[in-house]
Each structure stands twice: as structure tokens, then as C-alpha cells.
Length: 152
Image 1 (cartoon, helix red, strand yellow):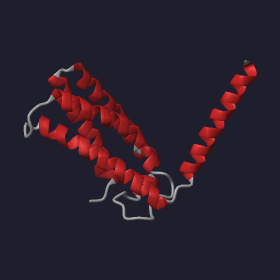
Image 2 (spheres, rainbow, N blue to C red):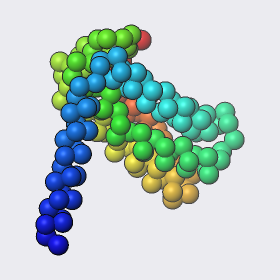
Image 3 (tube, rainbow, N blue to C red):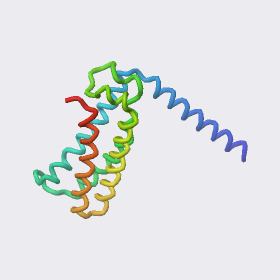
Image 4 (cartoon, one colour):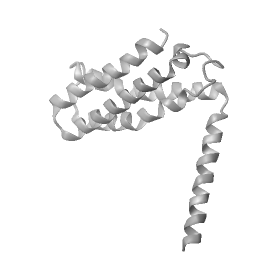
């Protein structure tokens, strides 16, 4: 039994190592495409929430919850799109400051991840006031990163 667990653990360790190696050896243009795709998906889901909060679209708690669930899932994937060496290789709006102040950039991503999770939790509560308030906090976390690290 112990030997079998050791083999399973070794197999998992090899799989993680292979995935990590593959990720670190991605071509910069592929990494840039990945991050732009993640951002497009986030925008696709974020925009209707903003429209609902601003009253430009009818409030739909079920739709709000669906989109916040997606945002919570996408949020941790942001960092994967900013690996070292992906500052060039394709057209990008990412400012060079990302790589010179990566610790701050990562902190802003971490803040957004926390806010996106809280947004999804607010949506699960069904409390419209909480959803609106948390949307504003999540949008502010998103904006804080874009203002400093995204070129216009």
C-alpha cells in the first residue's frame, strides 16, 4: 500500500514539474495571447455587471451570479499570463513597469483575486445591496492595476 502511494505521489510530482516546465518555456507571443484572452473573458463577464449596477440593464441576480462565478475562476489565471520574458513578442498594452515592479503588480493581482472571490460570495448571498457594493470594490481593484500597469 505504501509503495503504491509513493508511486502515485511521484507521478503527481512529475506531472506538476512537467506542467511548470512547459509553462516557463512558452513562447512570449503565446503568453501574451493567453493573457489577452483571459482579459477578454473577464471583460465579457464584467461589462454586464457594470451595466446592471449602473441601471443601464435590468437587474438579474441569476445572471449576476453566473458572471461573478466566472470572474472568480478567471482571476487567479491572470498571473499566468505575465511570465518573465513576455514583455515583448507580440503587441501588448502591458507597461514595462510590470517587470520592474513585479512584486507590486502581483500584489494588485492578489487584491483583485480577493475582491473577485468576495464578489462571487456577495452574489451567492442574493443581497442586491451587497452585490452592488462589492462590485464597486472589485472594479476599483481592477482599475488600480490597469491605471498603473496598462498602456492606453
